Image 1 (cartoon, rainbow, N blue to C red):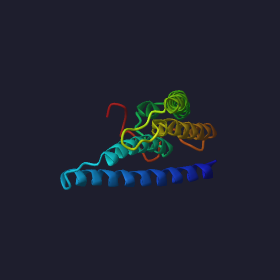
Image 2: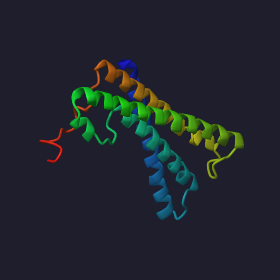
Image 3: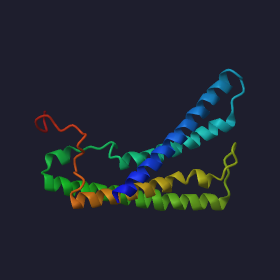
Image 4: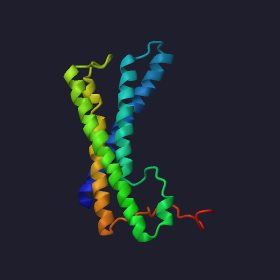
Length: 174
């Protein structure tokens, strides 16, 4: 399972970098066309908005997979090793449940309804359901990462407190 995670991490990282590069190119062209050519490009403006949404959502899933997301872990530091493991498992399961219900189920429903209505984006004429596809895709990635973390926490392969994070200096009130 670790080899599969490494491949998914690599694929998501390459995808995010490529989308981000296109996003930067769109924004640079938008600024150039607006201020130098005095003819703003509506296509790159819309494309940049859609790419930003994809980078944000897929980037959030990737960050979760790298365990580099924003977390308030004071309770983990205050709890003993066994309690910290169970607390981390609970949090991981709650994040996975949220991702499954809101992002995967809700996002899939949004994509299906939007595709059924035939809604198109104004400038690019893309079906908006494809644009919203980032929501369930990110949710699926988050659920998979949560399952991998939960298995690692139960087996002891993953420690509840990230080794890269700084431990509190002396106590909770320092």
